[in-house]
Length: 132
Length: 299
Image (cartoon, rainbow over all chains, first blue to last red; front, side, top):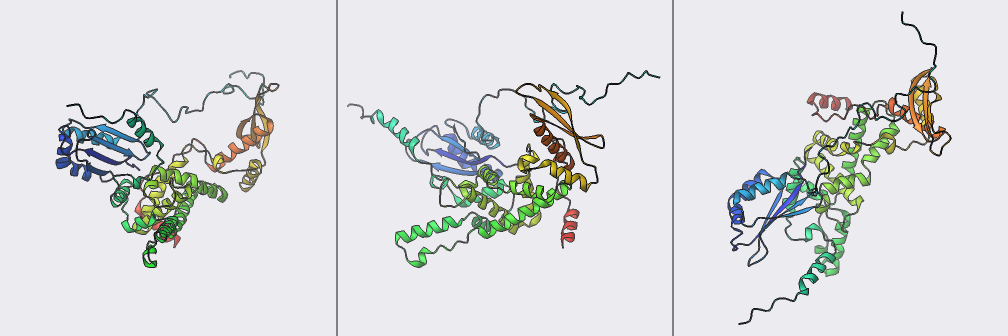
C-alpha cells in the first residue's frame, strides 16, 4: 500500500522579519487546510522571536533525510506548492540519474549464455530423414 | 563610534565542530516533537484506524518501564510516585506474532500447495525474523515512536514493537484488516528472493527422491548435458536429471557433484512451483464471501 514518505514539516520563521511575510500569511490562511488534506504529515509551526536565521521549511522523511528549503520572500501560494512538492517526494537523495531506463525483468526468455542453442552431448546425430 | 565587536572568528568553526561531535539523540529529545500528533500521523500513514490508547501501549517496552522506575528511584521519589502505571507491549507482541505467523502460513499453504511444511515454516521464520522486521520498522519510523531504554533501538526491540502494533491493530480492527496489513508489509519482502536462499536444504537430492516417490515417478538419472572447459581451472558442467528418459531439470555447476546438486534444486523449485517465472502474488481485495467461508470452515 502507499505510505507517504514525508514524516514531518517544520516551519521556522520570525514573526517580525520582512522576508517571512509569505510564511506568516501561509500560517494564517493555508496551513490548516494543508494539515487537513495531509493527515499523515505532522506540521510544526515554530516562530522564533528576534532577528534570526532566514525562514526555512524543514522536511523530514522516513528514511532519515532532512531537507531544508528557504521560503524567504515567497508568497503563500508558492509555499503551499512547495509543501505539496515535498509531501509527494520520497526521501532519496536528489542526485543525477545515470540512465533514464530501468527494468526489473531484463530477460523474458532467459539470458543468453554460450550454451543456449547448442545441442547437448546426449543428442543422437542420425542420418537425415528425407522429407516425403 | 566604533562598530560593535564581532564574536571571535574561531567561534563559528568551534560551534560547527561541537554540532558534528554531539552524540546522536532520540528524535523525541530534539525540538519540535508532539507525541500524540505523531501517533495520529502514524495511524493515518498506514491508512489504518487504530484505537489510540492501544497503539500507545504497543510502543511501551518493558526496558523503558524499568529504566524509568530506576530513574525515579534515583531521584528519590516516594514509592507511589516511583511505580509507573503503564501496561507494556509483551502481550500485544505475542498476539501479533501468533496472528502474523498463522496468517502467513495460511496464505503460503493456499498459494504454494505443493510446498512441504518445513519449507513454509522456513519462509514464515524468515519473514518474522529480527533483521527483516526491524528493517521494515525502521523505514516506518517506529524507532522514533518506540519508548525503550537504549538509543538507537536494538533490532529485537523494534521487532517486538512492530509485532505489538500488529497486535493492537488486531484488537481494534479485527482479523480481516490485520490480514491485509500483514500481507501488504511482509510479503513484498519476498520479491527477488530465491526459495533456497531462505530455506537451507542440506541434501536436495534426497528431498527430490522423496518428492518423486510421493508422486510415483521413478528415480531420476543424472546425465551430463553440456560441458565447457573440462581441462581448465573453471569448468562448467550442465547436468540434466531424466525420469523415464524425459527431462526433469537441468542445472549448471563447477564440478559434476555441484552441478548435480544444482539440478536437484532446480527440479525441486519446479515441483514446488516457486520458479522465477511463477504468477506474482495476488494483492487484490479479498471478496467478503471467501472470508466468511474461511471463518466457517475454520470453526
